[in-house]
Length: 599
Ligand SMILES: Nc1ncnc2c1ncn2[C@@H]1O[C@H](COP(=O)(O)OP(=O)(O)OP(=O)(O)O)[C@@H](O)[C@H]1O
Image 1 (cartoon, rainbow, N blue to C red):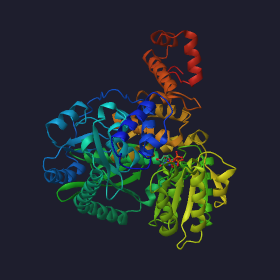
Image 2 (image 1 turned 45 degrees about the vertical axis):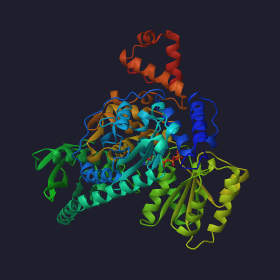
Image 3 (image 1 turned 135 degrees about the vertical axis):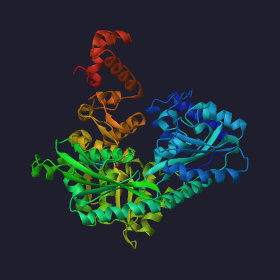
């Protein structure tokens, strides 16, 4: 099957795909033309998660909570769809944003039995990190609709199925609140399934908007009233929205915001919310919070909170230099990081097209997006990934964005383009320079390329801004952690303990900010409120190795870290339990940069 296509043709495709998957699993070279780009990328991720391909052995996580805005809005839509499908063997599944199956509608005995056998049932998570490539997890991971057929699944027990998953976004906050998935037998697969899943996700979003609109309006009005009455710190929150006045953003750093939001969420969720609570912030400053629940249509719509900092012990200068979001969606105040961001702003303001360079995951796209949102909010913003340039329709999309759309276009990973594609893109950029309206174009790349076709492309971009790896501004981990936690856990009810933060700051983050985000995403799977402790951190956070380890090395490192934790840092006992000599464990600890518990 061609890598860009969306639907495998026939049996020959199926056999070829099965062979390709097997080659991938046995670490043989894979012909990228035999498998779709998005699937190959997902196989690589599955391998990095160490997902087992030969079995599905999931842990039952918890009873799904169906009394949530998502379930309340989605269930009537799904029931309606079930009626329309009129007994056809298509399973309709709703999950939360982490891939936890919330509900599955009956689809006939044979299919239901099979789905039970592969744990595609309420209470189990179909996140990519547990099951590997699949319609639900891969759609959520990529943040876009995804159809996965037969042998494209990473786990072989899913090879008889085809699934179409679509993330559901909250219509107001834009956050991913869940996914809808339609699963059928592979032999019955049809490209229309994805269209149906997209329509269903759209209907659920519409229902969410209708259901939450009135309550959100009540919350907004109460928030505005409070802001008019007081010049102090005010914020309003519910599960989907956080509003904050300028004072709150200027005076509180992200860690303090997280603590206050967590406390406010807890106070509002309690059956008898107390009117005023005193909270000690990480800096030692005391804050008195006045929480007022807001109701709309008989239900809790959220709460408005007014905060007074009651301890003046913190000097004003410290308040002013505390890290805060200086561009939309960005935190961090390390000198190298800020210099990169200011350079991007300057090039944008000069109206020049821009190349941004840096290791994978350092935040290249995030900075460009933030500058765009800051300078031209509401104007069209599009992202094209050059890693998917082999996909059918990619060039047509690039042409449309460059010549017709105006606004901002980011082409990520241009260093992944073939020479032919580089030449074609250069021609399009030439045309785009004369387009009306002219787009602002930025490209991102990980490696420096000084010659050949890449030089031809880069002549359209007068400046290259280099963003530093996270290890060069590792102090920003302190601000990134609470920021990511507030993105991952609604209501901000999870904070990081100082002990865990110390380990996070000591890690070397070869995968940069993206890796930090992935680590926290994994942690919130099992800890959703309270404080993250050192024991919650995965073994990779106990190493200061500067290089990315191979999957086999990572497994060995993890085993050593776990054993050291089990034996309270006693290296000799840990080595004994692993069947390793004392010399070997010392060498490995040094080689992998393991920070032992005793350290
Ligand atoms: N300073 C920051 N503040 C907040 N979030 C950040 C920051 N830097 C990076 N991120 C987040 O980290 C993740 C990785 O960033 P991003 O995708 O921009 O990296 P990238 O350099 O473009 O990666 P790649 O080259 O691998 O595509 C994203 O979720 C992004 O929002």
